[in-house]
Length: 125
Image (cartoon, rainbow, N blue to C red; front, side, top):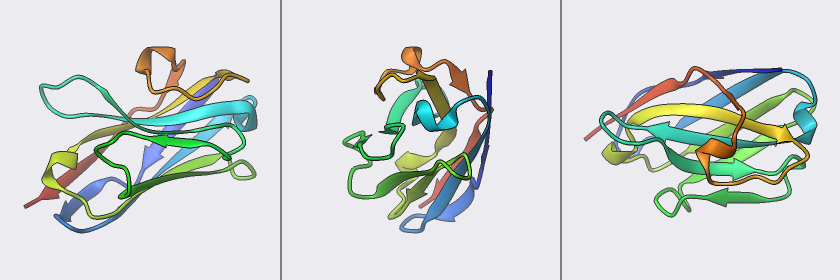
């Protein structure tokens, strides 16, 4: 079992920055690919970013590429999402997710096995 707890959400003006953090407990964090997803009111959950278990490979949704950066610290069992140049359309609940051990990171939410409770991000115009 893996437990994930997100933090760092809040209210920020357009153009500002936030750093989300996800703390993981449980087994084998360093062998799990991790992802960040988001869900805006009335919309489906969508992929934001993912990182391989080593941290050597990352992927991003086109809508956040160049503005968001995903990183992980396997010694501390954390995965972060640095969000810069935020836009009102980035407003959503953001979720951290973990895959099963030793499989690659993907962009598909259904392929992630563990989820956090989410943290809310609101970007005002």
